[in-house]
Length: 214
Image (cartoon, rainbow, N blue to C red; front, top):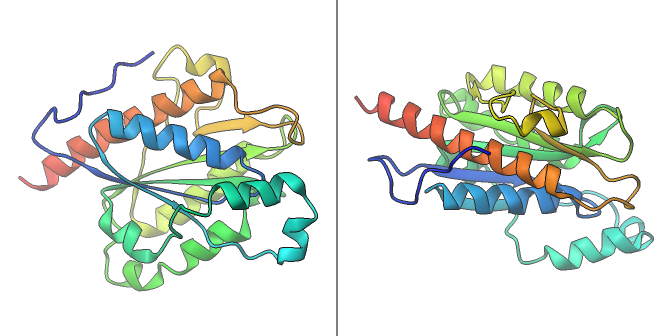
């Protein structure tokens, strides 16, 4: 596994926003793992959740969804300021028919003002996702997310196969997990992938920030 940069190492502390949507908690667990790993690597962190768009009746009809809503109520909702603040942003979403969830998409769609001012360019971006089934659209979801980053003029930092452990989860586009309709909680393979991704994002963002300041 890759070795994280100790907190305080290097001359540039980077600011990392982890912005995610999670219904039943899988993506929330990945977001927490990524946030903790990025902080250990020396970054300042904002963990933010996308506002919920689903009706409360629908949430209450699914015990896991309702429980995740309660468990994450203390996490602030994402705003455009969180993305503007950050040097690097990791976006997380469950797969919705091979695409980004509407809740995270709304967060992205609210960034038009910052985009128009050129304030989203030259930041580092990366993504993570989950699906209920194997081959359920994780990779296409991340690629769809990255289409938006191209419009930002952002720098996509995918994990690739830069660490031997990435051959275990097998997704070079980002961290992902199959939750098998809630029967398979986030496991150590996914957590390891999340840490690798977070450490790589912090390292590259630190280098980009230092280079741009010259």
